[in-house]
Image (cartoon, rainbow, N blue to C red; front, side, top):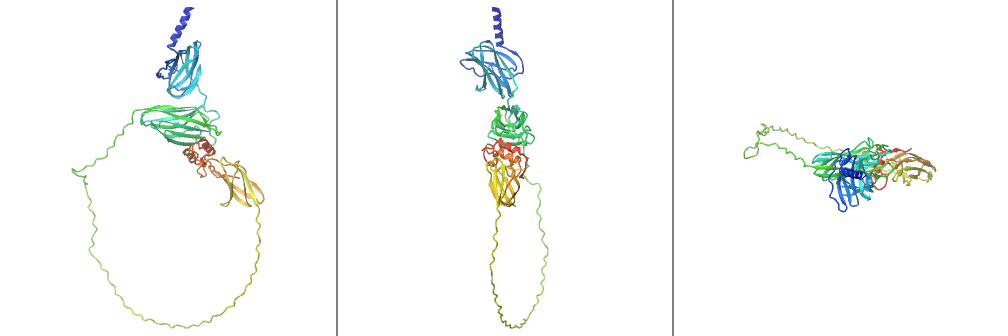
Amino acid sequence: MKSKRLFQILVLITLFFSSLGGGQSVSASSSAAPLQDPIVINRNLNIWDATFIGFVSAGIHEKWSLDLTEPHNFEVKASTVAGDLVPLLILLDSNNVELARGTGSLVTSQSAGSYYVQVQPESGAGFYFLTLREVASTQPSASTVVNPASLNVGEIATVTVNLNNVPAEGYTSAEFTCTYDASLVQVSNIAATNLFGADSAVAINGPQNGSFIVAIAGTNGNKAVTSGPAFTFNVTALQAGQTTILCIARVSKGDNVLTELPSTGSTLTIGGTAPSATPIESPTSTATPGGSPQPTATTPPLESPTPTSTTAPAESPTPTLTSTPVESPTPTLTATPLESPTPTFTFTPVSSPTSTPSPDGTLTGQVIASKPVIVTLYEGNVPVTSATANPDGTFSLTAPAGSYTVVATSSGFLSAQGSATIVAGSTNTKPTISLLAGDLDGNNVIDQFDALTIGMSYNTSTPSAADLNNDGIINVLDLELLAQNYRQTGPSVWE
């Protein structure tokens, strides 16, 4: 019996210095400096789907180092094999900042980088088996991947930003806020993919001061319903160093609410120096000794020909004429004025009839928009009367009987236009109409130029036309409203 017990202890000691199983390798780094009280033993967690053995107590903790070369969803699990140990797992980043913890196990999603898994007793002490395995994540997230992850100065890498585990109902729009070290890399060629449809509306703000924003919305009912790349961009290495490139995502399901997703970034390492340019020699001219280059040929100036003869004008004789004036007789006339009689007129005033104005009529209706609406009656091209609709869009206009054109307008929306006949003493009601959001520049078409305005004004409140949902800030939710009416033209027919 005693020999069996000794054999079990020997097996545990052997397992303590070895691992069981095998799998895909993960690169592991050397651990940080050991902590004091309790003693921390540094270990390497360097094999996927393998089993390691360790021992912890109140005075001994173990810290396993782990390097990830790309984003991973993984589980670390500690199972007690001897003693009364209840293991506690703590995930730390490279600066020993706690990221997550769990009793017995923890499941986490992390980007590429250096991490530590510290095992210590929640209670008790004893031996444990430690396993590291990759798990499929079902939680929606965003990830930023740099390819290649190492560059020399002057080289270019492609960055892909992905939406992962997109739910079945999909996303109508997404906003990505990206950061990087602008002293190390330069961003260019930002381009959306077809994740939100072939003709998605895109608004870009920046790049500037190490950040930029990309907002994407599916147009005319399109959504992102599958996982995959949302957009790409290039980074050019400017100088040696290391920078994290991270794009944090917020998504909308069309309910005017933005939800931030867990987002992971990637690290780009830059080495080397910029290649030196080869100078281009300018052509050398041949000069004569002691002076400037001499021309090889000269062209003498052309002299104007000198006329050889001069022709004097001939003088014509001047005739002398003498005329004698002849006096005509002057007739003498005497006129006797005739007096005409002065007529006498008598005017009798005639009374003009007094016109009776016809009674006015009323036009009512409802125009739906997220912003104030103005309804105007026109006779020809001349406005007759107008009114601002109530907050619910209802309106009432009074005007003389007649035929008119009625127009409804709202800042940032396509106008609606129709005919209106007002009957004296009666009320005519137009059908309810919804204005189409997105015409920010007022040219009666909703297109990428309007989306460009949203990008230029992102996270501000001006121009007010771009704040389509009237919530005081211009962002992807306004782009989403614009995208619903993408490529529409106005005015809308109101009949």
